[in-house]
Length: 462
Image (cartoon, rainbow, N blue to C red; front, side):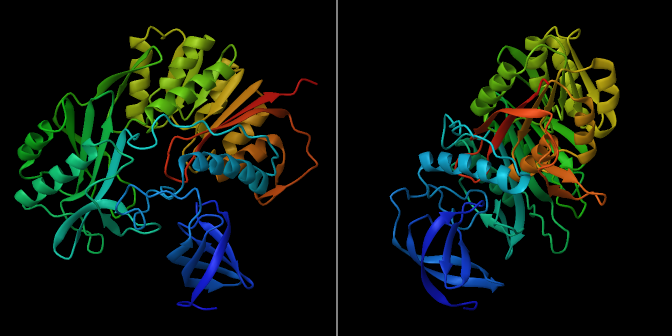
């Protein structure tokens, strides 16, 4: 078997990336957009050491759970992987993914609760983030293809609300009328490289990431936005560095208030252009409710706390909570949130890294519960060591990446041990300090392979 061969296969299972897995002779093939039980004609793209990758040419026997994707660029765009799979099966796949990943990577055998479904299968995202480029002499706006920086142009995205379609059209109109170019990565030139929009309760923060300090015709773009959004702010963010990081450090407010108020579970909060909020409002509320239900009396140490919304909910419920956040804007929002909600005596917002601040705060506060909600890369090993040394009564982990969750959980549970070289290996020798109270997936990202997972650990009383 070699590249370019066309073969007929039947998928036996679905992989961690949402792709179909089939056997062809001695080769295991990974085939995007093929479902278990489906027989299809596929073209081989790559084969090495008994593992191959292929693309579907024709599905001869569709699975009962196959549905028609809503997105016109579903097979090209890298944003969604599961629009062809009926939603109830997406939920089953995600619960199974969490269970299998915890065992395979972390050595943790755990019962996993059924995945909590999203209230909306489409149109659920409160944040839009699009690269802007230039191809063959024209501006393009869209999403990156899988594992690339090649923009797939699109005028619509079903997992975003309808306003996203109107915004894409307005941006292209603005750039054409004002003679602005999208960013060309190959030469590092252009005017506009990204557009980012955050919705907070029907209030919108629009940020254009640009490579120039002044953007001609910006008043015309404000005019176009006025026809789309009832209330909005517009920022320019300057970023001319050859980096994958979207935002630069310099934000300039062009129009509007700049930050907006929201209300979640009785907590009034403020968010700006760089404040982290979960992208699915309804699922965020369900997950935060569950965390607060699990948390006992304070103090609670909330690591990677963002704008402080969860910290405030924990402070209100548990009596005392301290949040650690490294982004100054988010930390300022958290401090203001404590003030506006009358929680100054119960809640503190600490600016800094969790690695540097954890020990000091733990010594001062003696937290009974530690909440770890890190970025996708997971919890730094030094933080995990500090958590184990502290030995709190209760640990709550939240993760959008099952693989790093499995690694971090295995370290805390003792199913993974650290070698002298700093590597993690599976072990059965260490007796765990903790038992798993629950593992609950939340479908924060319908139509994609991504999943948010909450794990609650309780200290074993000996």
